[in-house]
Length: 111
Length: 113
Image: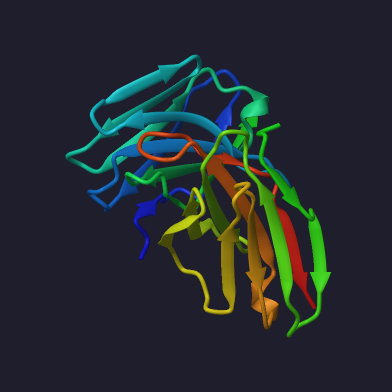
């Protein structure tokens, strides 16, 4: 069963604009959420995280928002840069650190 | 460099064979996780070890097994291989417990022919 869903398989955004990636989850036991970025032929790279007790976490160009009542989180990248072109995975984590990933969203940043 | 080392990077083997994938976690990390990424699919959780003990199992086939050794490195054993087992296998490690990030290795690409 798919506990984490990323319903947009792809996103195209112009350089300098905002990228918004969305993620929904069903497992109420998740207490930590993470975003990973993945380039082809490489392992996922940790990007940013948020605890379930917060609703926002910011790190440079990246901001993650969590809406627990809606079981929804989003990642904002602003401004988008060409190097941001990658697949982005949302993940929910249980108390043991086990991650359940969404299917990923391919982001393409165009000049 | 995440600090997680996986070997080999590539593996080509025939159906019915058995292979072993190896993972060395980051220094100090007690948790090791294995994930499978098939073509056009997300990362599927297979199994989690913490300090040598199995903590959680995901969608891991009975033909697959894993262990974590006293030096904390881990091995994933895949046997009676089928064409559908062709995938990228990732290992990740973390200090373990709540609210910790997992760091991934570069993966092992397994091709079953």
